[in-house]
Image (cartoon, rainbow, N blue to C red; front, side, top):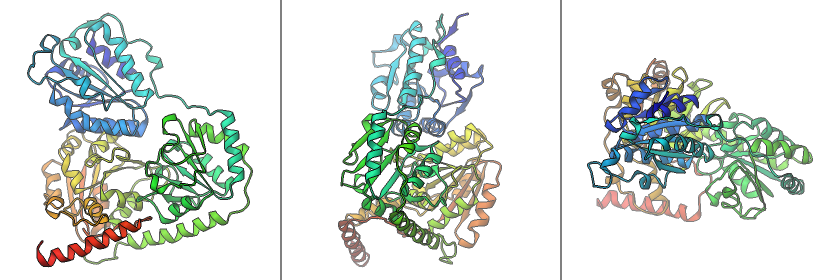
Length: 564
């Protein structure tokens, strides 16, 4: 029996395991909406299409499975683009659907006219307009296959009349659509890596998101090589914070012992990471990089050997080839530094460090301590990322999602909604600055509307805090009129939306407030009024930055007196 193009599309999405479509309905999407209504897929109506793209990105990042978002003709589709960069930059499989005017109205500058295939070209691995019903089955298959192959974003433009037209054939080869398999390494490359490893005295292993599912192998390799494990922000979740091999992060969301270890080692193994900040990587060239993506190998630091392969089979092949090392002096030095660094973090997150104000480190640490064993933390971007990334103590079972490569402000709530929609019984906690929350605060209504019990913790300092830090690091007087702003009463806002809201300013009340908020059956906001002038730990500061901070502080002092 023939089906409409919309029904054929929904059928295949249901078959490949899509649980929700996030979008805003409109005239061009009505045929799609009708097909979804008759399916098992849940339509999650958002308040802004960017929120739809972020929700899909959050789902895809967490699961590695296809997630779907939709926007209607013209502006409805253009709003998707910003959110889709989350999936594109963090390599998550997302299918974006654009409604479009009927074909007979194209090319005459009709109302809401755009060229979606041009618009989506930069953010998409594949973009195509379905111009005829007979074309639909093959194009739908190609789009999903492309999203998985990247992984990344695929985009389809769906003219309203095509969506409503009958198609004789189903989408072919649906059984072939799914996440790509592991890539086995070249055996000769593994032998070369083993020779380099055996010749090195001190080794550090930098672990990225590609190491997910390989925690046991990493621990075994660390033990055999007496090599500390250092992680990227995306890799933070892989092993519990208190594992003695897990020495902390590299970079501003990281520790000084980890930075020193990477700089001082004879050999750095970069495993499943395309770590972008070259200034934190060694320049000696004795680097071995293991990654599935050939294009990522060797572009961040001078690299001696590159191995194209998935982390799990590559480490499994490498382990029996390398000799057991017995000298642990380098490992022990890093471990001592890590213990001292952890003590510093504990002091800074002490809830009663100040009696009259809440330090942001204490908020992140308390959220971490109260979170459930399988919680998902969703970080926003900004100064709040440093508090969350450095002070949350993950247990190895919890997940961490953020705007890691795109580094976009305002993405946490939308991604949290998408993740929460997968399992409304799982604890999902979004940690965001006030500036980021303000950008898409309407998506809190999406959470309320669809009974998504996400908990939003806001670091409220009435400013874009990271912008202040960035200006001062180069000796520029922060532009306060552009950086600082007024905020609404977030607790009242939550209640006005039909949810629970809390405000906390007294450090003595922080724990009880978070406990009460986390116990709410539905969505909730906790606005934490935090000290606005808190400086983050800087594991590595260039001499010019030290001078920059000093100059900026002098300028601020003069401006305070002169009013300049």
